[in-house]
Length: 293
Image (cartoon, rainbow, N blue to C red; front, side):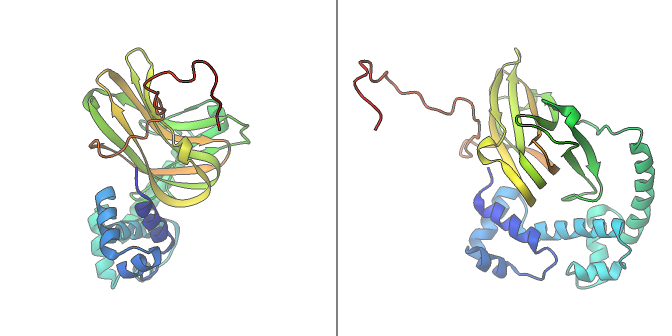
């Protein structure tokens, strides 16, 4: 799982993406040393804090280019770039085209896709499921995303009662992961959710569930900004399939972006919620003489 340090940093960064803060400012506000903050964040996310800020600012720029008529030079300054040239250079490196061309091309494509969406709402690789999938919708959202150009949105269409849920999910073979411990992570953003989280399940060839976590003991509630969440499971040798996705219980909206699978070593604790209670070595209180205090 990601530590509180990393999640605190991301919450803090997301609220201040457009402000000219330095690492020393973040460290001071969060109560950590710069070294500790940088080391933990890089170890857990694979990128530095400055690289995270750069990618998120560029994603924000992409949203501005698509959904506003703000001049490119103003977008560059709003996002703390020193010049339009520096902004264009960074944007082109990430999105493979300059911002002006991106605005023109993506707006054209978006107009075409909106027409097609009235006929087809499938998302490649993803399935809408759950106890009552008819109460939910699954779409891609080009207006809200963490990085790239869009996110996956799971939202309730009407009131969902207690115990009713929807999920956007995928399933794939466990063959390439057998004998490994994996971390499944993604970025989530929520709006007025009753309860939601990332989930992952491992089944054997008989269809029996042998590993599972749905963040039930650390679920997300209400409205939250982008943050990173993960589950960690072992993939035993008798595993046959892996299933994962985002779970929404009740009403609300949850956006997901940037799913990632990676192997981790055994020093990273598993989040498997099956068989977590340890059995005693011997039976106790066989004569019923002891009572709980």
